[in-house]
Image (cartoon, rainbow, N blue to C red; front, side, top):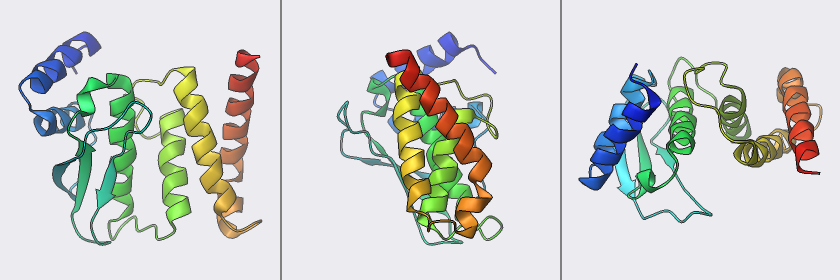
Length: 174
């Protein structure tokens, strides 16, 4: 794999040439995020710093499209890599083999991976302020699962890990 500065230079070159989709495709290949259920990228409206929306779209069991903002690479690369990974997890969750119907479970799994990088350790870590934000989002989805349900029990250890991370991050702020 290329060094992070080399990757950043390549992505910036794509961005300057209007190649947002090419840059995103390059990154999922470079970081080993490919999935046979992935159909491709499409552009959506520009993101704003306080709201960067990427979505995975398509029927379960069918190839998925990821919509990314046309200005995706105006933002920090480590954040965009984590968001692309999040969406590629959703692509995997919508395959026949990994079918996860419950939206709360899908989001929980994707946010958890953004925090701990268990499946994709090659993805760069996020800074603490992003981890804090995504830990809160993960716990939001975990708490939406029915109280003491099979799903909450299934993810109890991961929830504890996330709670501990959030406590540590909150303590750093004080």
